[in-house]
Image (cartoon, rainbow, N blue to C red; front, top):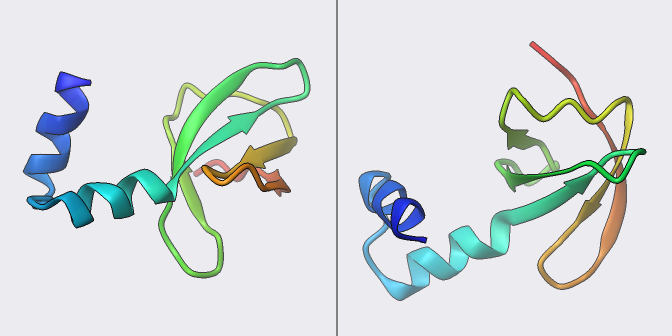
Length: 77
């Protein structure tokens, strides 16, 4: 948790509202073999970023903080 707070501060997050907005954009990404990673929503269209080491296969399930679920597709650059 300490590392996350430091990174958020480096991004300019300074208030409780900033931290709440970042937390609301954070998602869980589950692969077909129950492998899991986290990601963050970066656009209104639903584009998300995750770490490069998250190799979860083609079809993934995205779980939002409110419990809603959606199917997704990973694209690697």
